[in-house]
Image (cartoon, rainbow, N blue to C red; front, top):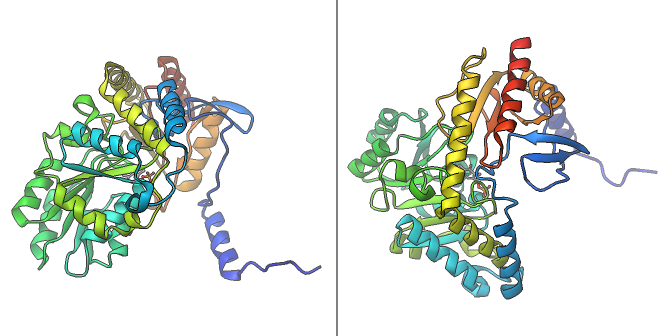
Length: 393
Ligand SMILES: *Cc1c(COP(=O)(O)O)cnc(C)c1O
């Protein structure tokens, strides 16, 4: 019998190429919630690669809030925010986020990827360029492409390089940076960048997906560390998929920017609102983040980070400058990174190797992430295993 469909040869070639370079990716299925002690393919592992930095993804308060919200408002948003999909849990969440961060308005998005596409494609165009950090998240790069805006990327975390690009640009536009860099864990020089933005009249946008919830007073993120607010950063993007432990995203901004985005951000206008049950869970996450329990979790996370860095300092690897929950160990080539990740499994540790194109060529790494959900014993297990694996080579 003839096959029903012939896979195009260009596709098979692209897949072969990825396999040959040890860059093939595939999903694995967790047979457990997103918790440090996971079960994968029937085996138990302690996982060190999720973004659930505060250990909220399986928190009973969030589960209860989601159930309550679903009881009261159902599970489906039913339409876009502007047609009839903006329900009370969405509204409450927006108001609470605005209050928490000191912004006039907040708009919810289904995902962080969509929020970045939405904001940049609405605010940049052929006449309004985008300047952004070389290591910014893929969704920020893709936003500039969707906008068809001229885009220049400055040297990672180097304000002088950003300044040169601004001086060269005939028009002003958007200056965009991650708050905490997702693959390196370092924090952007936000004060210097915000000074440059005001000096050259560019609009400054910060994507704080990895800072919110974890850093600063009451978990207000990277901006709080530098004492920045709406006046200096009119666009602050945050996600719920990391420290919040849920999913979705938001943009905190001024009244006028919010009005503008509501008209012109196509990934806001032409998509169904997030589930109201999820909005209820995210509101519970925010309450927890601002509470004493949130503070306790941030303290525990900071203790884990300090212990990890002190142990790994004596190993023959280079630690990055990160003070955050993201503590990468750069291995180099992809096959070695895969092999190290494989060896860690024998010690009961799960840490997926991160390879190009997510990170630059020759910079494949173990992107180790720590969580308040880990115990001290989990950290000891990780550091003992790393010692064995990295000194054996
Ligand atoms: C995860 C992430 C996003 C995308 O957010 P999602 O809600 O997962 O789509 C955007 N920016 C940064 C810096 C991220 O780490």
